Length: 246
Image (cartoon, rainbow, N blue to C red; front, side):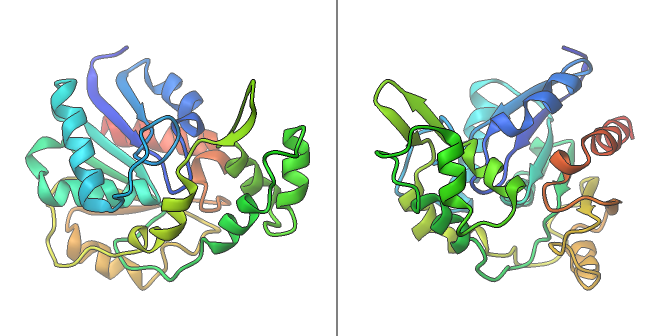
C-alpha cells in the first residue's frame, strides 16, 4: 500500500469488483485501493431501491465507515455516473474524478439483450459455465460480453446462481440511463477516458461534459471498446497512473 490519495473503483452495470482485481493489485503499490460491489451487484446486499441517489449515499457511508479522506473516484459506465453524481453533491469529499467511457447525458435503453441472455439460462439444468455460455450466445453475440456477464455466475453445493439482483436490475435499468442535469456541477479535476471504438462518448458530448465539469480533460484509449480496462489493460493502466500523478 502506497501513500497516494486513496482510490475507490466503481464498476459498471452488471459488473463486479472482480473485474478490477488485477488493476487494483497493481495500483495498490502506490495507493490504498478500494474495490467495491455496488448494491444489487456482486456480493453486496440486494435491495428493491436502486437509483443514483441511494448509490451516492452508499458511497458516502463507505467513506464515513472507513474514514476515507479525499479519495480519487474512478467509475466505469454506471459507476462513472455514480462518481459524477457524488462529486456534484459532495465535491469537498473528493480529490479527483476519473470517468471511464460514459457521458453525463441520458442514454436510450440498450441492456435488454443482456438480460435476455442471462434469463435464457435454466440454472437448474446446466452442468458447466460453458453450457451457460452456449445458451447465452443465442442472445449475446460477443464472447467478451458473455464472459463479462458470466463472472456474475457462481456455483455452490446447490448448483449455479446469479450473484446480482437480476429482477430488480432488469426492472430498474432505466434508472442507470438517466443523465445529470445542470451546468458547472463540479470544478474538481476531472478526466473522462473514452474507448476509441466505443460510441458511449460522441464528439457532440464533449461540449456537455465541459459545461458540467469545466476542468475536465477528455482522453481516448485507441482500439478499446466500452470495456476499456479489459480491452487495453496496459495503456489504460498507464493512463490512470499518469492521471494519479497529475
